[in-house]
Length: 282
Ligand code: AMP
Image (cartoon, rainbow, N blue to C red; front, top):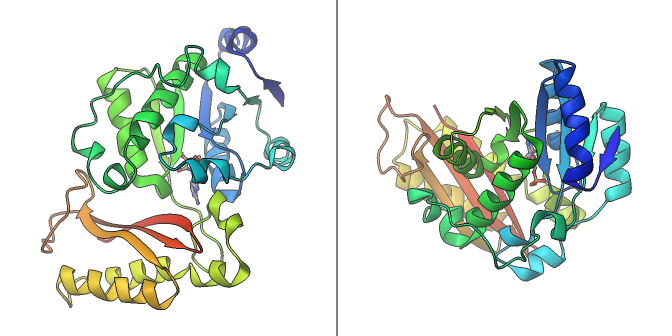
């Protein structure tokens, strides 16, 4: 694996690979890597691409300063995992490399309703930060393929919109959520939980399975209310949302129609750590 910190050093290597007819698969991350991240790399390798991973804790996508300050950093372990996974290139830029004109000089993206729904509502400015960093990374790396996780469902929609709006020449791939054996979605933030909270956090997954299994038996309102109770009983102190939405528009849905694809999405706090997860329902 070759590590680059600057675009000016990375670009010639990417050019060299391109001249050899190699195609680039890119997986952006914020580090504290786990099996979910490694799955993105595996998917790129399996498709025969040269794999580029970035690690950059993007300050502009954190609406909560404390969350940014507490974000786990495990760079040595990350490098070890990346080498073991057969990653070809690690891009590890500094804040100055990504934002040479400072953190205030940001582009503004039209995200439509995605800006106001769910994560957009509870994390104001978050997706503007995501678009700023993703657009910059995609310009620097110019991959043919981009791999991101379904775990961040709305983020996938936002990045797909970015690619479409700017007609970026990259194919987008969504990788299914990788879970612990218990069902808990793998997340860098899980490392901030006590053993007890980590065991109880699986309640989000169980609540989603409960809703999926009872979709035809109860109203969506009752299903959401029951799911909320399950999270409270498992020690979640604050629930930003448990919402059942149209899987393509993310608009909340009031009643089940079998021809509409639905997704349930949850964001909730336990021990002050905000966890998100989702599940396609039909
Ligand atoms: P992050 O480092 O949390 O910004 O995540 C980097 C990428 O890894 C994003 O595309 C995430 O959706 C993806 N990712 C994170 N957790 C998982 C998971 N458990 N399963 C699959 N992909 C994941």
